Length: 208
Image (cartoon, rainbow, N blue to C red; front, side, top):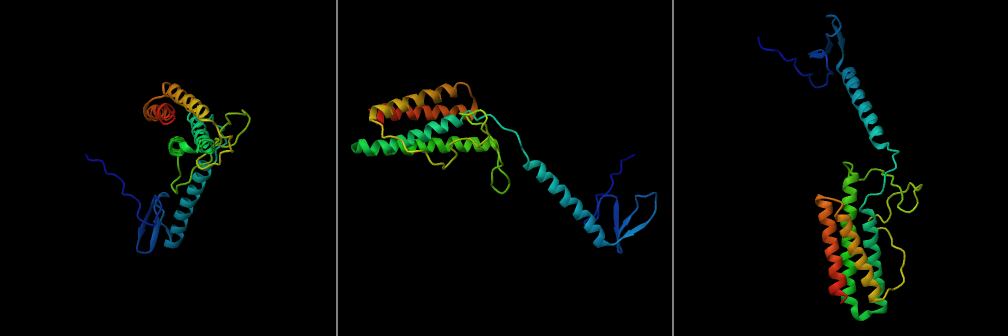
């Protein structure tokens, strides 16, 4: 004998309430016929929907967790600092303007790519905004501010480095990215490996 599935509720009526030409009729109470006008039924259904939505939004937006810093955050800080150092170095070595500008641009791109990956893990709301994500500072364990050096954040002025000093900075960044890449996998490992290779080229070729 085939199983008969109950019909889905009609538009404008909540589950368990059928509709006829007079409005919605509740047949769920031991066969008693209670007439509910269409406006009342819509108000009941709408109120339940709004209430559920507001409760879900409140739960989804409340997050008191203080997260550990994303392992890529330190690499973003290095990249933005290297970009600032390369720009500052132009003052001391204007004849290397082209190479230094290229390095500053590449390291900024590295920082932006790292930040995009960090934000991807945090998630994005439907309207494009990011949720509040309290992150423990990499410097002070009790700090509950956001991750340092977020995309577009201003980098403090740095003293113009010499070419040798900038080369050493890039070499250190290259090694740091390579070391972290070995502890990760997938896209993140590939991103760090690419950044490490670019730093090696900047230090060994552009600043040779």
